[in-house]
Length: 269
Ligand SMILES: Nc1ncnc2c1ncn2[C@@H]1O[C@H](COP(=O)(O)OP(=O)(O)OP(=O)(O)O)[C@@H](O)[C@H]1O
Ligand SMILES: [Mg+2]
Image (tube, rainbow, N blue to C red; front, side, top):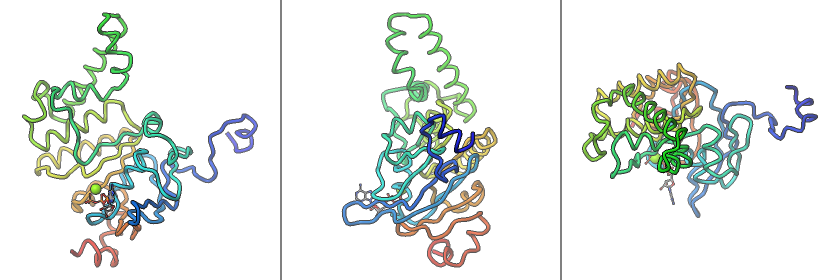
């Protein structure tokens, strides 16, 4: 649809030059006097894995939380598929197809692995629970469908053996993969990961990288914050480097690895 016919049809979706999949335009966030993210601009393309790296306190988590609507920029704009999202509440951004996995996972300790993952399908809690209690046919079908999807998702991540275990019985790596499985249940278009590799052993690192590549091949866009630069250089299509809240560099992994400013301030450490 051309811009003009779009105007005529009265659609409110504003392109305004924001045709990229996910765009940050001059995004700034201050916590009181501390500027955690300063005037950051870049675009995430559809279907790529983009990694944000940078030292502790660089503003990486803050940027992700603004993307999910959990924090509001002090200045600047965020656009997701042509819609301005920095002013939207988090649940509306989630409904557009964006899901975040947090740095500290946040599994329900009193629920089995399978139930934790099924909880990722919020439709289940909205309509499903009441319907199930009343033994309504469609609700039971829906629950079965969600259960099957959760079992399949856990199998893909190599977690079939722990469906009925509780989070405290799992290794940290397994807990992280369960958190990912839960996020994947609603098939997000945009997956936001905050240090998904943190605390994983070599085997789980490889398992996670394979999963991320598979998701990408299925068309998912992944925006990931990560400390482990070796892993980032292996899995990322592009990298953005943050330093004290500012964008220091942006480019393909090889470009970033060779960037003198990045080496001096971060990679060389
Ligand atoms: N709720 C808050 N109130 C005040 N300052 C905060 C708050 N959250 C973060 N900060 C500060 O903002 C800056 C950016 O923090 P952020 O958590 O985004 O960094 P990060 O790059 O994710 O770091 P890490 O690698 O340690 O996770 C830091 O200086 C941090 O101390
Ligand atoms: Mg962080």
